[in-house]
Length: 141
Ligand SMILES: [Zn+2]
Image 1 (tube, rainbow, N blue to C red):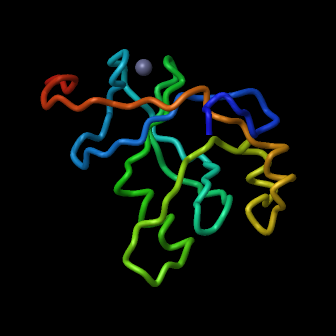
Image 2: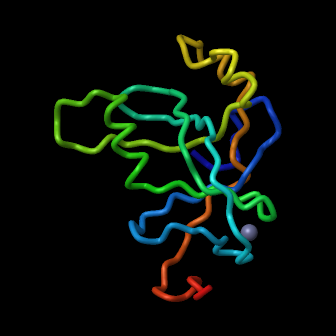
């Protein structure tokens, strides 16, 4: 995937960061250092073994940067459960974007077709890698 391809019909929304660092919880934004908010967001995830699905997940959101941060250690067990793998191998997945919360509340998750999903999906503006340098962004309060 080139990263420039858009899937969702809605305008791109959010920068997305998957946080691999178990103990970094990003109560403040790694970019601008203001306090992040806890949000539950319906994410569109592509899993190689199972196709597209929607997973509503708690994440951190910086409203200033429009940056969403998801804990990798939290999302991967949920994906594995969805894929229902009997093997020990981790599913290969990519978080592609988000679904309009109103569409989610209408019950999109239950048996939506890919076409229906795309109609109310917004791709991420970009995927961000967060570099972890212990103590780098964590400020004492
Ligand atoms: Zn920020």
